Image 1 (cartoon, rainbow, N blue to C red):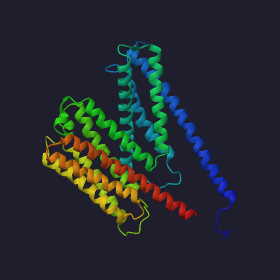
Image 2: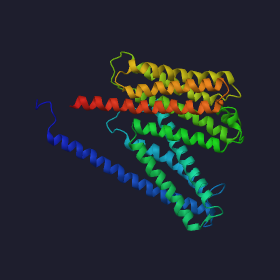
Image 3: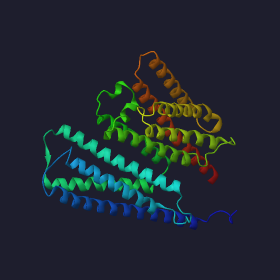
Image 4: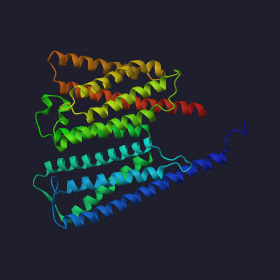
Length: 355
């Protein structure tokens, strides 16, 4: 027994090594944040030349902070993944690994860009006509980049399934919200949600790009979330992974093929995404028997809600936009909850094995 169990000294050393590595990461994160603060402040000094600046809009502090933070997020995320890499790993990164890193780096950049833009717009609405004086311009620009660097570095070095699910949710919400607020046609909602991607303006490009990157993120999460899920079904893991990958691929194709140019293909992949989701909700009780009854019931309620809303649209009571918004919300809410459920199952299985 004693020959196979780790000694207390080894366990203590392992914990000490983990704590030391975590402290080192925290110190590096603070150093990166300080560097981003100083660099953004110096760039702001060149851009604004010690002049006052509006809070939001063209040539504003908010615009500069958003762009600087987006660039910072990309650089810091990639750097964080390099620092967080397992030193014992000798396998080179594959194409899928590079795509995953690029997609999540872009997602963090978009979250920073849209988040700071939205924050500046809200602040300006409360301070109408106000401008930011020269010194606060430099300080706030640096603070935005520094905070973005710290949060992005933490995300990159502590990336797990639950954090990945959170990034997906925040990215989707901010991307679609930004497209709604900047749409050139204020009456777009009278047609359908896909109308946001029909024009040639920046709003349509943002909407379609959001869907494409979100599709890549879903396929990435499908591979990680379904890895080592405890199940007694011989093909349970592969079946769940296939359905989630189909949802991700079809979601990306919705953005690749705008509805005004490829109506049949756009409608087909959007419908296929819902079908794959419904199959997964119904069959997950057999593919992954360990999921809770509460989670299963929630999936049935979500599916029933989509069916009811579709009937309301068919009889003319609801607009298609309302149905798409609610259906999209419940589908991705279920996917995010499933990712967290799968992570909990794996953690419980790991804890049971240790005991």
